[in-house]
Length: 388
Image (cartoon, rainbow, N blue to C red; front, side, top):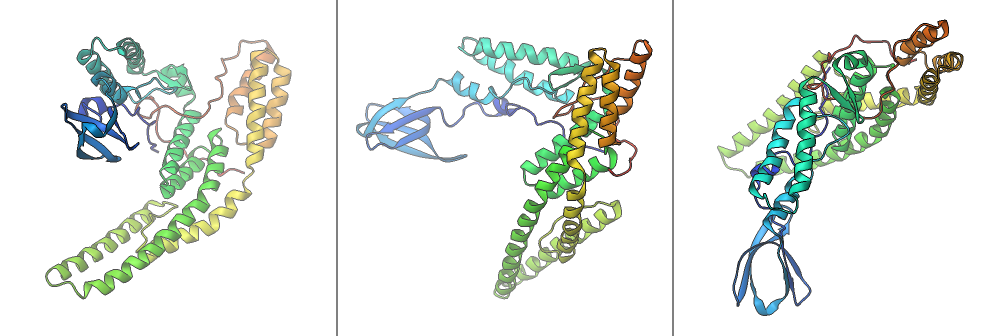
């Protein structure tokens, strides 16, 4: 099972490839209009600048000095800093191969602008990234600002891998890639039905379903209009362009059918969505019709309550109160028998009650996850039964 790694800081590679950002200078006109961009040249009579007219689009403008109210220029080091300010230490460690690009971006800034007022801040960030890089090289993983040794990662891999999948699912949903997100949920349900991430994943899946249905309906309607326009317009296209366009259209449909066949062969629950393929649309509609009521029937509230009881049991163990811990464990198991944390907690409570030194109980994991390229854990787990 694979999941997307945590999102990388926006600074990665930006400073190395974009030496100047087109929003450093501001020219305010007497009319009240404000132009932002890069001033290319300035004389007593005029200002020539690349003005930003839309995100990623500039237009070179020549402005008479008599029309100018004020000019504000941003230093080159400040412009460059804007490209790397997103480089910040996160609560989760990154893939091991991601640190080199970040370190190089920060070092390049310090080399280029050693006297910048931002140098001290950038140096502090650089030092923190280098220290974290060394820990990750040693196969340690940071999770929710807590570092796990390789042995701890192995011990907690079930919960950590589930959380990693949940992070991927959230990121996919934020991009409105709903089919991929729902397939990620299917993976969580199959491999980690006793994880603390599972009830959160159910809640997310339930919120995704109506959005997926709505997006699919809009795309299907748009595809019908496009198909109608194509059918009407193709008769006016001369050869050989006409045959080429028809062949390309058939190729798109054939590719969709091939992707559908692959998904069916692989047992993918949510088939890929192609608006022009009736087979694709029918398959997704059928899954939507059965999945929505099934998810509504899952005992999510009981799962969340079980997790709360699990956390109370952990607290009781830390306070050396085995009786309370066992009571909370029993309560948690009654609410949700598949709660994976209960096995380790039960053993720890039993050991404490008998007076022997129990193995340390790892704290419950929260939102987020280590990267699979970071963590020395298997990305596959044996399937477990569906949640009761």
